[in-house]
Each structure stands twice: as structure tokens, then as C-alpha cells.
Length: 151
Image (cartoon, rainbow, N blue to C red; front, side, top):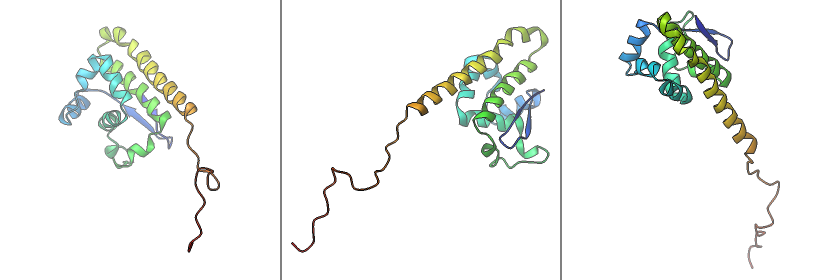
């Protein structure tokens, strides 16, 4: 069974079966289409709000033991947890398919890892090149000094 750890160290099982497919469908999330098209699934994993929606449907934190309120679940998902959850979703998707089609889907896990790694590299590049404007300690040279009052 595919699992991932959240930022508190709790293990979350990720299972895709008929029950989770029906829950996804009821929530308006077309999981079967996303499972059949790696690009659509990768797009979902790269979109944090959409990915969170999928994780809530697959993990059902309110029914976990002990339960976690759905509104608290996102606060347990830092970057490492989201990365691990993406891998777990890919593994659960592979496990869902019948044995005969698993071989062709086995590449999905690698695609998901590459997509998440590319996102991590892009974010790292942006953060290292970011130069925030820091406030100066005193008035800047371009700011005129206040004029004396009463003149």
C-alpha cells in the first residue's frame, strides 16, 4: 500500500479503489480521466490546491484514526510531505490497474518524480535569484531632510 508522512510524522495511506473513484466522482473530481492521462495527473500534482483536493478525497482525514479536521490537513503538508504524497498517489495509481496494464503504467512513478523534481529545481532557482529590497537603516540619500517649520 502506498503511504506518505506528513510534516508531523504521521503516515497516511493512499489507496485508489472503486470506493475512492466513486467519492472523487461525487465530489466532481474526474480521477479516472486523470489516471488514464499522465499529463493530466502530473498537472494535478503540480497544482497545490487541486492536489490538496485529491489528497483529501483519497486520504479522508476526517475518517482517519485519530481523525484530523479537513481544515487542519493542509497545515500538515509541507514541501517534503507534498513530494512524498505525489509519489504515493503515483504508486496507488499503479496498484489500481490490473496486473496486465501495470507494466505500461510503471513509468508513471518516474514521470511523477521528474515532474516534482523539476518543480523543486525551478523553485530553488527562483529563491536563490531573488534579491529582496531591504529597508535602509536611516533616511536614504534621495529623501530630502525635513524642512524646519516656521520659515
